[in-house]
Amino acid sequence: MEPARRQAEGGRSLGPRGRGLFGRLFQGMRAVTPPRREGVAIAVASGKGGTGKSFLATSLAVLSHRAGKRTAVVDCDFGLACDHLLLGVKPTATLQQLLHGQATLDQTLCTSPCGPRLLPGASGVRRMANMSDKDLVAFAHQLGELAAREEVLMLDLGAGIAPATILTMLCADWIVLVTQPEIAALVDAYAVVKCIAQMESKARFLVVVNRVPEPGRGKLAFQKLTEVARQHVGVQLEYLGEIVEDASVTQHRLGQLPLVTTDPEAPLALGLETMARRLQALCGGFAQREVEAEAGIEARFKRHRLFM
Ligand SMILES: Nc1ncnc2c1ncn2[C@@H]1O[C@H](COP(=O)(O)OP(=O)(O)OP(=O)(O)O)[C@@H](O)[C@H]1O
Ligand SMILES: [Mg+2]
Image (tube, rainbow, N blue to C red; front, side):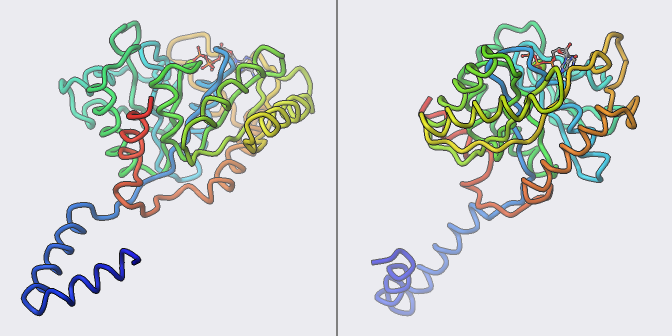
């Protein structure tokens, strides 16, 4: 018998008093886990290190904020965080203090001069690079709290396939996989796709090919990657776009803001703006949507961690 019918029949067979009790119990259960509203969670990931995740995550967050969307960057490069430097922020507390109950979410969140909020990570903290289960549960809770406030969460991951990194990808709505046209970066990007394909996840992949020597090379690299992913693990990848190699991207001084803020009319910044618009369209708009509590980001994270 279908659950809904069973509930209805169960209520009838209890008689009027039983039905009242049944109804109150059922309502009580619903009241414990009401649906909630959450923003879109986008994990920015790569296999190989240094492909440009932090540059892209911070740039896309600035552009999303500029498009009028409530946006936060979460520095998920656990133990080696740097987004505060890229966004011109001096944090007083980091994820480390937040997860260990020494600071609240409000005390940890910073507003960057370029617009988006930042949940800064810790740098040079070995305990954060190797989070305990208690830390992971606390992190899942803070992600849930933040997702309830923002329209977009940009989760800037560390490179590779460490458990906490894979977990964060699994609980995201979208995974922006940043790679480069060289073979080593493409092979490592495929390794990430393969890891995620082995797990039960609804996250979908969008690929960015960064540091291409000339326009058009990104699409060629993507075609190789998507063909291998389709053939070997049956995963469909989507192309988000390419970014050319350009020295003006690199921030050299403390306090220097990202190119999309300092030179928004530069060709590379305009290209990023087009990419940000495409990302928003692919995500069905950057807006909060209603999710059942057990389908929210906190619950997804906690559930996946049981299978790691
Ligand atoms: N299109 C580009 N052209 C030139 N330099 C770039 C480009 N994209 C990124 N870079 C530079 O490459 C370096 C690495 O970028 P970034 O820190 O964003 O990579 P990452 O993937 O976050 O690295 P990690 O794996 O260590 O977290 C930085 O110095 C950045 O300025
Ligand atoms: Mg990085």
